[in-house]
Length: 180
Ligand code: HEM
Ligand code: HEM
Image (tube, rainbow, N blue to C red; front, side):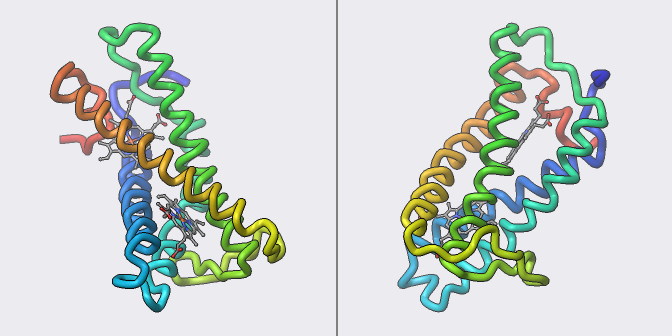
């Protein structure tokens, strides 16, 4: 796919919209589990967490389709080939683990626990597999550890974006910001 100076407007909307949903879902997940007695006695935060996070399963289909059919900005020449390969690997991990794998493990967990997922509070997501008590602990551990790994991955992604802008002073962050 040909390279250009900036992401398309649609790619920017998808990136920032999904980033907002992702970061909100992550913090609500942490609050729901670690402050359960104080903030989540009636499971309200768990229901909210699942309602917003599950929208990512649908948005990612549009996002990947758009990504594969539209140009992305060239990386700056100041980045070494090794750094450029690192950036590609980081983005592949964000797509595969944070935006696809993590919602799938949440869906799996709720399915084995026989709990509903209301997508954006609008309609129920069908269960991925039937209820299974024997898989509960595995499903819970997978989603929990993966969520922490992804917290670190996204934290690193944000720090690298800020380093490009404020330390390297290149156009990487500008390519993802709204056109002025
Ligand atoms: C279909 C999508 C998802 C479903 C059904 C789901 C389901 C769940 C459930 C049931 C919990 C436990 C909440 C509780 O015990 O009250 C949880 C925890 C959590 N989820 Fe999700 N999740 C989904 C997507 C995501 C996404 C996209 C993220 C990241 C943004 C995420 C991050 C977390 C975190 C950080 C926790 C707390 C883990 C801990 O115990 O420390 N989840 N999720
Ligand atoms: C304050 C938060 C964030 C900032 C400042 C930020 C910044 C950026 C920037 C500057 C790029 C373009 C990189 C390049 O041109 O090489 C980018 C790409 C990307 N970001 Fe973020 N991001 C943020 C949050 C997130 C979150 C929460 C996710 C997902 C969990 C995410 C996933 C991605 C992905 C997958 C790409 C690759 C886009 C592509 O080339 O297809 N970002 N981000």
